[in-house]
Length: 299
Image 1 (cartoon, rainbow, N blue to C red):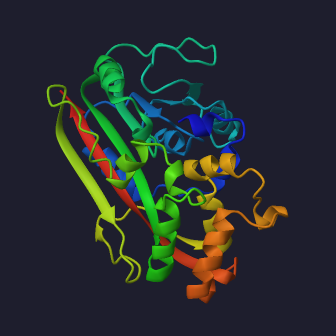
Image 2: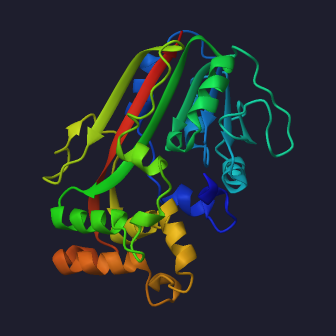
C-alpha cells in the first residue's frame, strides 16, 4: 500500500470519489456471521467508512491502516461513533501500532475481520499466521474488492477505458499497477485461498458487469453509481496506477488545475470522439464495478 502512504496522495480525494458500499453487502456479511459481536477489526480501513458502518453491529470496532494520511482522514470524521478507534498499523501485525501506540490484539479475541478494497495488498503467509492467533473459533473473515468499472450504456467508451487502464505503453496506465495486487483484484479475489486446516465454509459472491444497460452483468451486484463525467475522471485519479504515472510525468497537469491535460484528460478526449456525452463533465453516466467477496469461518 506504498502509494497510499505517500505524502503526495490525497486521502480526501480518495474519500470523495471512491464508491461506497451498499447495505446489501453489509447484510450479506452479517448474515454469514455466527456468534458474538464483540470485536471487529477492519484491515486497511482507509478513511473508515466500513468501521463506522459496522460499529452499529459490534461492541467495539478497530480500524487499522499503514497510511498516516488515511488514518488522519478517518480520525477527522465527526461521524465516527465512540466505539470505533483507528490505528496506523499493518494488517499482518496486530501486536504493534506504528504510530507509537501499543495496542496488542489479544489471542482469540476477534469475532470478525474485514477488508474492503485492501485485501490485494496483504502478505498472506504473514496475515493468516496473525489471523490464526487473534481470531476466535467460529469467527468470520470477510474480504471484498472491486475491479474495473464499466460504463454500462457505452460499450465503446468501456473498451477505450480498458485500453488506457491496462495498455503497457509508457504513457498509458497499465505498466504502473502494482502486481500481483492488481491481478488479484481483476480475478475477483479468487487468488485469496484461506488455509483449509484453519478456515472452513468458504463462500464467494461475485459480479461481472455487462455493457447492455444497468444490471446486464452476471452475478450479485453490489457497486453501482450514477456519476458525472468529471467525477469519473477524478475517480481514476485516485488509482495507484495514476500516481505511478504522475511520478513519470510530473509536468503533465490536468486541465482542471490549469494544465494542458494529463492521461485522464487524454482518455476522455478519445472517449468523447466516440460518445459525445463524455465531452460534458456535468453529464451523468451509469457505472457498475466488477466485484468479489470471499467469506470464511475460523475452525
